[in-house]
Image 1: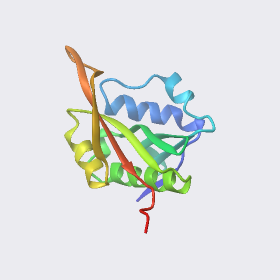
Image 2: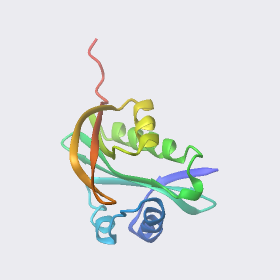
Image 3: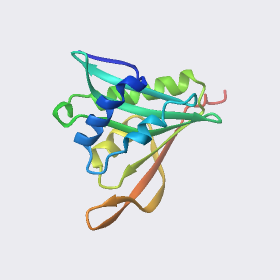
Amino acid sequence: MIHIRSATPADIPAMLATEQAATAYPWAESSFLSSFSERYFNAVALLNEQVVGFYIGELVAGEASLFDIAVHPQQQGKAIGKALLSHFLDEAERRQATDCWLEVRASNHKAIALYHQQGFHQVGVRPAYYPAPGGKEDAILMAMSLAMPSL
């Protein structure tokens, strides 16, 4: 059974290993280290006490940004990414965020479908944003509102 809890700096080696296994262009360890200040909220997904996924979130001025989310390739397709995304949204709401933002590679169709399923909408494109084999790849900018509709 998957358990999600807040990440701590002690989780960085396992988060980094997951990131390296899951993506061709992983974050550097220094990026993980810098993501544990007061404005960040991060979580890890555990299976049998082993980190199999994580997210890095940030809250600034009422806006929550999902900076990174990854699930180890051996555990993909088991709804862990969906559970992490739901946890991120719940935590953003708990922290009184009014909007959530994320960027995703244009080629990451599974992630884009998951984000749409959870209520995100495409609001823009960042051309040639991500490194890719033979050049650069566009980032799809997505957002969703957490604000309560007025009655």
